[in-house]
Length: 283
Image (cartoon, rainbow, N blue to C red; front, top):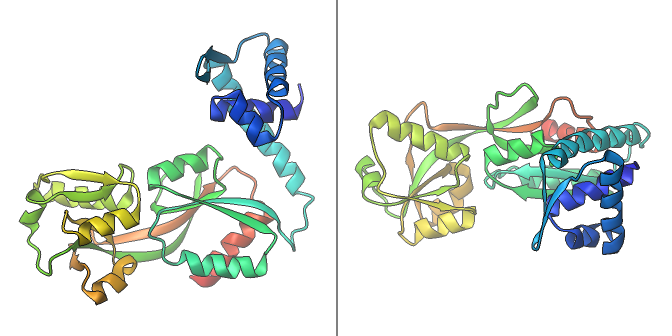
């Protein structure tokens, strides 16, 4: 068994397709198929359920995926031990909730110092990003905290004030029962604060409409479709223009803490360490 076989296996497992894995790895499909078959022969067990639309991991395949991630992670760790700490390079994969307004300053400063690093950003809700850090699919992520998990380390970045955002200048709490709430998908920290507030007040919302992007949510609020909860700093310009209005959220639901997280037992490369150093220098 070769380390490259595990990389091929991971690509097929991720995409559920030999053709897509071959495209990602720049291999011919027949080579990918042959390496998977050889791996199954060496392990003396099938690793996938095969069907017309692709391939799905069976229980043995899932077990191998877990071990292969750990093995390849350790291999990368060994390689990183020999990299030049003064000039980090490579790909740094960072997750982010969409309303981290400090991110452009962090990225600009980091890029200026370390131009050889390729930053890959992935947006999502807090729960999903935490899981991707745990699965080692992300090097780190900006999420809503605090996070209590034995394998998660965290660095507080800043605190923000949450506001309820509407198209109208006035607001009554009863409006939550009259107009839709426009929120991120389940797992969003802002949404959890709002739901806790509503539960404490005994309020049942008329309707919850889920959206995946900040722009869609704010655009829908500005169009008068409903209301949302969001950090005040992310809509300051729109409030000044009178496009939307922000209304106070009561304690203890009005503050949100953004943290940067990484997996505790993973190797911290110089690329990631320099990124975290940059965060610290700017907060």
